[in-house]
Length: 150
Image 1 (cartoon, one colour):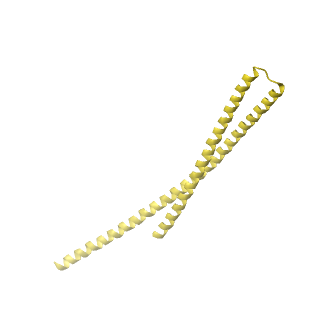
Image 2: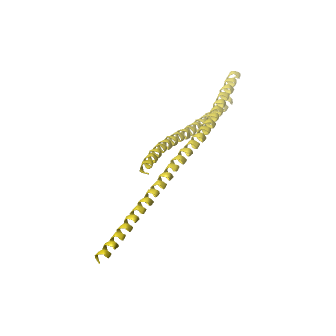
Image 3: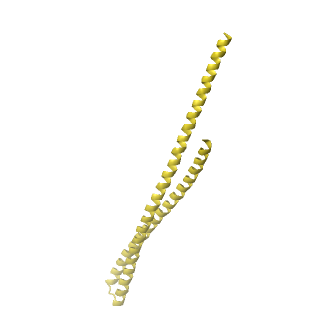
């Protein structure tokens, strides 16, 4: 019984390490999501600033070439925003996978903990029975001793 308990404790240690790694991976991808969202916000803010700046300059007059360059640059910013949105969605999908993996690691760790707890309870029951048996034998022997010496 003690040997299987050692094996289970070893497996529990491995499960804890795997859970820690899964948690670190999940935290990293969640940070990647936050970073990608922040980058997207910066791109959107830059786009808005650029539009506002061009509006103020356009009131003074703008050449056809400048207008074309403005439109091309605005399209490139829009593409970057859309690309960033795609990256965010990819990170979210990765986070879902990492979350499932973390949950699986958590479940495995918990199952080892439950098995170990049951084994400890079984060992305790066996110890209690053994102690009770010894107490009963001692009591029986003491009665016999008292009867013989009376």
